[in-house]
Length: 197
View (cartoon, one colour):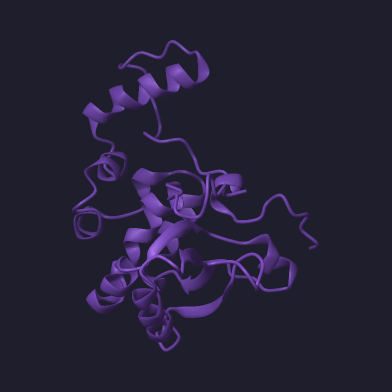
């Protein structure tokens, strides 16, 4: 389950946030600016609660927002997104009477459906073209390095793998991708709930 550690004001920095969220810039500056103004607690690619209601959103982003941080921006985004072509649904996340968290489900840009599927298997370097990487990841050099398989970044990733798993990989060893693959637990909300389907 996407863990919301130590309160709602903590940002959950998972793979969906790193490699999928920047792609919504495809919807234009108006969309991007309004989305930038809300406090995004976590990004995911599904929610078991929604699936258990019989709804399937297979190529969507689930954007969890704290409505109490910058409430005016939250309201503006809430009103704006309902009429946008990307909008699929929204709901209060958690206890409907007390939760400040609000979930927005938006359609991933259709042009990048292949990137979405490639993301799920962790083939980050095959997600986007060079032009798309330049367009979406301009201001995120650390994610860009993974997407382009930057050789200098490989050393850093191998060190991380060795620390994590106690391995003895060397910089000359072959490594397919320069980040760990996404897991269901880190990219889908409410995985602690049994799926009824």
